[in-house]
Image (cartoon, rainbow, N blue to C red; front, side):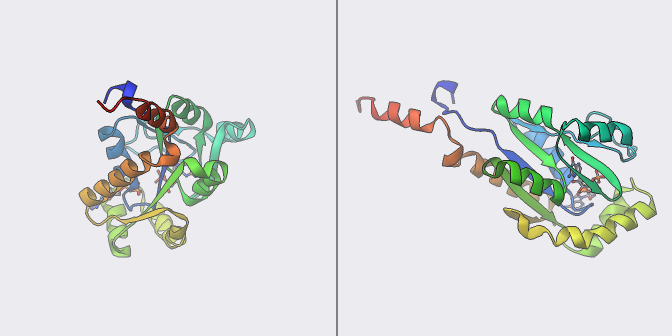
Length: 215
Ligand code: ADP
Ligand code: 5GP
């Protein structure tokens, strides 16, 4: 559609949360690769980098002192301690993307979700990803083969508490089949992008439409 006839729309913030191992990183990465006009918010974390992760792509890996400094300076839109590490969303990139009319995707936990909901409820869409069973959650963490056994044990111990937050979210998806879960997220994004409340340019578009001759 040419820009002339695509009414302007406010950018939205799409948040995905889940217990560790349910599949949200896989789903967020696929969404960013396949969809246009959506940026992944790259968080900062004090956690150690996994072998497969790239600094600046998956996270910005920083030490406690740098993390505390960002907190003090108000550089983080939201932040939380998760599984014993500090995580946070740098404010700047999110604001730049939204101002440019782009949507922003977040892979953050329930604590961060509540903070962003508090700041901008109308612009936020939240999705919670559930594993099909606790046994499958365990085997996914083991199959991922990126964390030491004590780290996996800690994540599993936290899973029940994280799962109990599911009802905070707008949408809940059981990630049994990866393709089906991805299609569900895509459908949510498509519908939420079309919401009348986000179509800031629609009133002008309709006024112009009504002013046009029928033939
Ligand atoms: P999270 O980001 O929620 O911790 P990941 O996206 O890293 O989880 O997924 C954990 C592991 O489970 C990865 O090895 C991923 O490939 C695998 N996985 C994700 N979704 C599915 C699925 N539907 N079926 C089987 N394996 C999956
Ligand atoms: P992981 O260490 O597996 O990458 O992430 C652990 C948890 O921290 C996940 O639930 C993930 O969503 C969450 N997380 C990652 N980045 C952020 C962030 O910037 N803020 C908050 N609140 N949680 C985050």
